Image (cartoon, rainbow, N blue to C red; front, side, top):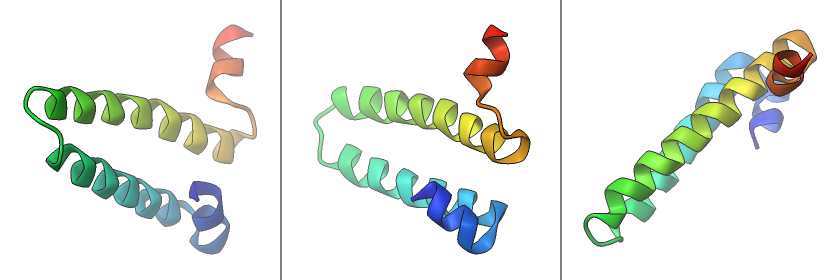
Length: 71
Protein backbone atom coordinates (compact mmCIF):
# COMPACT_ATOMS: atom_id res chain seq x y z
CA UNK A 1 0.00 0.00 0.00
CA UNK A 2 2.84 2.38 0.84
CA UNK A 3 4.50 1.96 -2.52
CA UNK A 4 1.17 2.32 -4.34
CA UNK A 5 0.48 5.64 -2.60
CA UNK A 6 4.08 6.75 -3.22
CA UNK A 7 3.74 6.07 -6.93
CA UNK A 8 0.40 7.87 -7.04
CA UNK A 9 1.21 11.04 -5.03
CA UNK A 10 4.87 10.89 -3.94
CA UNK A 11 6.15 11.25 -0.39
CA UNK A 12 2.80 12.52 0.95
CA UNK A 13 1.50 9.08 -0.01
CA UNK A 14 3.92 7.52 2.47
CA UNK A 15 2.49 9.73 5.22
CA UNK A 16 -1.05 8.84 4.11
CA UNK A 17 -0.28 5.12 4.27
CA UNK A 18 1.25 5.63 7.72
CA UNK A 19 -1.89 7.40 8.89
CA UNK A 20 -4.03 4.54 7.65
CA UNK A 21 -1.78 2.00 9.39
CA UNK A 22 -1.93 4.04 12.59
CA UNK A 23 -5.73 4.16 12.40
CA UNK A 24 -5.89 0.38 12.08
CA UNK A 25 -3.54 -0.05 15.07
CA UNK A 26 -5.58 2.32 17.23
CA UNK A 27 -8.81 0.61 16.15
CA UNK A 28 -7.46 -2.85 17.03
CA UNK A 29 -5.87 -1.61 20.26
CA UNK A 30 -9.23 -0.21 21.33
CA UNK A 31 -10.70 -3.73 21.43
CA UNK A 32 -7.85 -5.35 23.41
CA UNK A 33 -7.92 -5.50 27.19
CA UNK A 34 -5.54 -3.53 29.37
CA UNK A 35 -2.40 -3.89 29.46
CA UNK A 36 -2.33 -5.78 26.14
CA UNK A 37 -3.68 -2.79 24.23
CA UNK A 38 -0.80 -0.54 25.26
CA UNK A 39 1.80 -3.23 24.50
CA UNK A 40 0.18 -3.95 21.15
CA UNK A 41 0.09 -0.30 20.16
CA UNK A 42 3.69 0.26 21.29
CA UNK A 43 4.91 -2.81 19.41
CA UNK A 44 2.99 -1.90 16.28
CA UNK A 45 4.29 1.67 16.34
CA UNK A 46 7.89 0.49 16.72
CA UNK A 47 7.59 -2.05 13.90
CA UNK A 48 5.93 0.50 11.65
CA UNK A 49 8.56 3.14 12.43
CA UNK A 50 11.34 0.78 11.35
CA UNK A 51 9.47 -0.32 8.22
CA UNK A 52 8.46 3.21 7.24
CA UNK A 53 12.02 4.48 7.73
CA UNK A 54 13.29 1.68 5.56
CA UNK A 55 10.67 2.45 2.88
CA UNK A 56 11.47 6.16 2.78
CA UNK A 57 15.21 5.51 2.57
CA UNK A 58 14.62 2.88 -0.11
CA UNK A 59 12.45 5.24 -2.14
CA UNK A 60 14.91 8.13 -1.87
CA UNK A 61 18.22 6.28 -2.31
CA UNK A 62 17.28 3.04 -4.03
CA UNK A 63 18.96 0.98 -1.29
CA UNK A 64 17.32 -0.46 1.82
CA UNK A 65 18.36 0.80 5.25
CA UNK A 66 19.52 -2.59 6.47
CA UNK A 67 21.76 -3.09 3.44
CA UNK A 68 23.34 0.34 4.03
CA UNK A 69 24.00 -0.54 7.69
CA UNK A 70 25.60 -3.90 6.90
CA UNK A 71 27.84 -2.70 4.08
